Length: 136
Image (tube, rainbow, N blue to C red):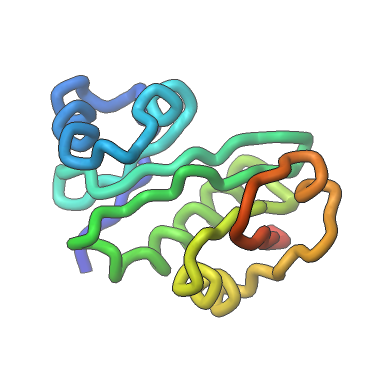
């Protein structure tokens, strides 16, 4: 398996970031650059995400993106993000999913569906499902 590295976007070279954003125009590059991470595999950026601290110990995993060619690595990426969250003393990580396949993956990784939660009420997002993971 190729080595997967999570790197703060602002620590990457401008050229690498621009090459990734140009190939993936749906990604909000301003937000990723400001407070996001990129996923590097074999010295190439293949994905990005934002692990946003919303309250003490509570994080929201936003704008998770991985290129189609590396989509099979999504379970490994999610596990690496949870390790990163634990290093940041997270107690919970919330994810808002828009795709049934992501729902299946989150359930397999022991995220729990959120029917009613303070998070859901505080950060209303249209459609999709909210999930929570309790970081131990």
